[in-house]
Image (cartoon, rainbow, N blue to C red; front, side, top):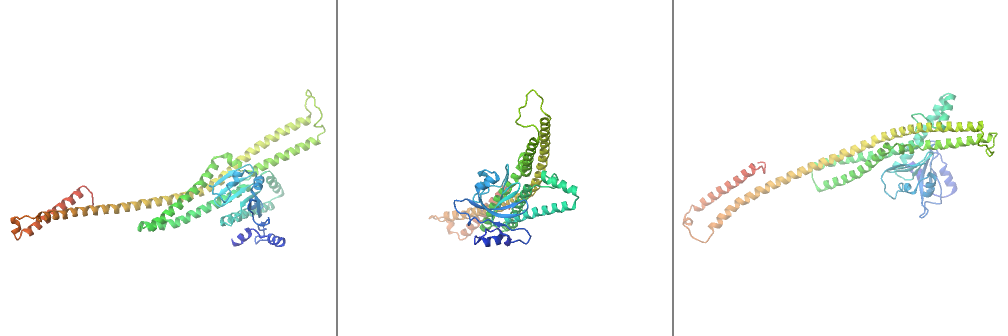
Length: 442
């Protein structure tokens, strides 16, 4: 990973010789490393240059620095789509299908996918580097498999394979370049979100168990922060899931994302028009010669018209079949990663339910403690009332008047006994009343 970071770093413009030596030094895998494009230093304020990692269909990669207007002209994108890829702004996860490109904004992966290349915002994030490496590996593996299969087959099969490469492969296992790049982006985003969910689970369950055993201010604050992270991560996962589900529900958007098929149709239409123009040029009748409206059209015009109708029917049938196959391929691809992201969302939902259950348990514990305090306060109030009876008796006998009871030596003892029995009787009556009303479990 450290070697890959060194290759992805912009090359310092020390000299043309050092730049050439660093750019063309072969890597360990035999492929050329990322080529640094010297634009007289890093981007300056006002020029709007950004560093992009370009990966073509062969797996070759290089670092280019271009402004947003060049990217807009190159990929035929409006400015609002490029704002989704701006790292200075925080936008939710989005997958947009345009005429000549697919704009992908999935967590750290912010790229533009065309039929021939991927333009990825240059970053030293590990997931961005893993995306580039994984995309290169898959493109290289697919190329090696195609060469091995073509070499192992007979010449007729080799010719048919070349024909399929020119006019679009109809094999079920074949995925065009843009779908493979989109698959790696979805895999990287789903892996990143799933790893964050796993880390949150590892941290959450011991903390929640500790909180149930010991309720303290520190543990409550840690759970509050954990819940905030969980809500933010759930929102991001839910956005990715909704984006994939929205694409799966709309066949038009999925057909719009088949860039290779649209490019093939444009090229076949262009070559068909060129062949028709060549047929006209080789025809003996000049196109500018006057033709009588009464006379019947010549055989060449009639043949040309029939060829045009047949070609248009064939192209329409073939385009409809290929569009249906491309929609099915992309739908199966999206469905696989929809299951993955839905599983991650279920993990976060289960964790949130566990947090809610822990909060309910803590609230029950706190309510129990509060009820015990209320019961103790009720008993204390009753005892205070009983003691107040002694105060009333003492206040009565403390009056400044003489009665014969004061001359009796055993009167004080009988007053204490009678007052104590009365107080105990009153306290027992209160306790029985509380038990009868079920105000306290006694």
